[in-house]
Amino acid sequence: MSAPVPLLDLQAQYRPLREALLEAVTRVCDSQRCILGDEVVALERELAAWLGVAHALGVSSGTDALIAALMAIEVGAGDEVIVPTFSFFATAGSVVRVGARPVFVDIDPRTYNLDIDAVARAITPRTRAIMPVHLYGQPADMAALMALAERHGLAVIEDAAQAIGAREGGRAVGGFGAVGCFSFYPTKNLGAFGDGGLVTTNDPRLADRLRLLRDHGQHPKYHHAIVGGNFRLDAIQGAVLRVKLPHLAAWTEGRRRNAARYRALFTEAGLDAAVTLPYERPGVHHIYNQFVVEVPDRDRVRALLTERGIGTEIYYPVPFHRQACFASLGHPLDAFPHADRAAGRVLALPIFAELTDDQQERVVDALARAFG
Ligand SMILES: Cc1ncc(COP(=O)(O)O)c(C=O)c1O
Image 1 (spheres, rainbow, N blue to C red):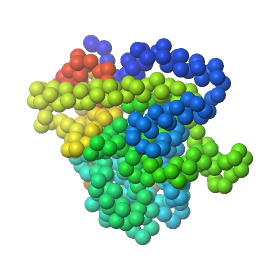
Image 2: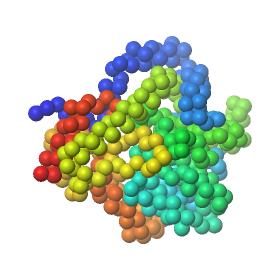
Image 3: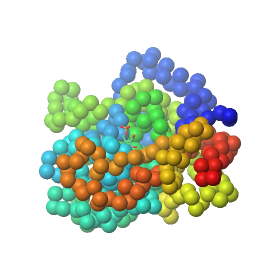
Image 4: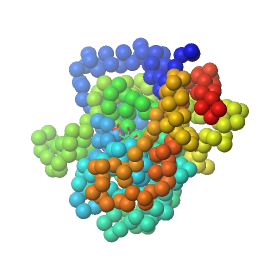
């Protein structure tokens, strides 16, 4: 039996950078400046330039980025925020955490991102904001969404946790809405050595508010004009991310090359009919944080892949409208057919930059066997 193919091999990324990473961590240890500080300030400057945004602020996680963004635009009790029902939990959880009500909408079945017509239908006098998710690394339809939001005077907070460097019309996500929110969770294209996140904005007033909010609203020290939280980024994470950032574009190119190679291999194996490959919307730059296919009889197929040592994952098996904690919101269970269908069929395959040709062939071969 050949060696297993993991869904993500972080060791392969770590090995060539080990010395530089240990040196960066040592620098922080020797400085004994453990929270925010020079490393985080430098990272923020480098990331703002890399993303083409005016302001970038390091925060403690992608989840806290979303909470800080909602607090910055003063979303709270009585407000509604429109979110896709098919995403990672934090998208909806953050809205509840600030006391507002998440309003779920169905997804576009091809991109898995929120359906703009469904968003238009969900707007009420209580709607304050829309939170698109750039799921798997593909931008939501930002041109259409920003036009809709502007017509209705609504704020847009981008959940770009999975999509650092993804672009629509040449412009990076996180720079379209009022605030962009990123995650440095280790499985992301740019991953830290623990939790971390980023908020971005082109609005200097919002940047000031976000800076206050991430440190309990204090300025100067022990004087609090507003109530914030502890959303600060650690210096070790800042130092690690600064070593990794110069490699991010090449890693993303590796993921995109692997995606193109999968397409060719699936066609070669005659699997195009059985396996639905990811759809790339024209005009977008998809960064493939995940390469997600759709297959019939998904759980059987997944079990067969597991038997053959192929790592896979299901992002996400239970949409928000079916979560026990959101039952009281009163969304009808049958109102989101595209999300329900995706939840039953999606399967993420290994796509990390260092994946070898041989490993990719084994993934496709295992799928071909699953379909007889
Ligand atoms: C779409 C989405 N939103 C929010 C988050 C939250 O990020 P974090 O895990 O850094 O809190 C994640 C990450 O897991 C995510 O994938």
